[in-house]
Length: 239
Ligand code: SF4
Image (cartoon, rainbow, N blue to C red; front, side, top):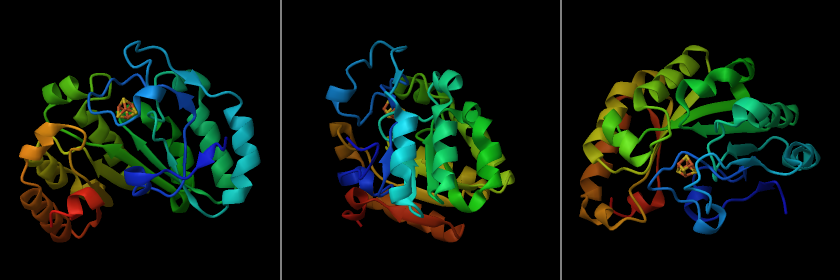
């Protein structure tokens, strides 16, 4: 099976190519979209593993994707706690850069994910650093994403990345509290270059939200602050 693969469905709206370096993810997000089959270790929080020979396999495959963009990562956070030991994300970035492949990182690790900013800032034309921001309220964040970094920590990492000349982006998905998601745009636009905006899927509580109202307000804010934005198809159909 290929290490660099083409995501299907909603994931593809983030990037046409992706690579997952580890098995499992121990952040415990209650809204996690990773299929149960690959995520059966979710309750055993420390059970995450590097994929076998992943770096060697990536070295062999990367030349085929020269000049394209690769997402890190869909089935786990690229800065899982064990990445501090294995440093696979750093090793993967170094390989991808060799083939002029742009890396699009998405992490909820906050400042812990800053250890590769030296690489990203040395290659700003090949780098995007992003964070999923779900809440401003730390208690709510802890409830839904208990082992991810607090929202302020993630915003601090974005701000520092931006200060180092790295392009930054925010995934506003899932949108569990529309008011907080709109406020996230208001407090981050100074150091965020792009927003990818979705809705709350896989949970019937999302059906109670006025998605048209939220989507229009989010677009208005992005335009007001002159920010690049992408509205995911699930949300766009309400507009
Ligand atoms: S960080 Fe992503 S992959 Fe990990 S539990 Fe949360 S939603 Fe799932």
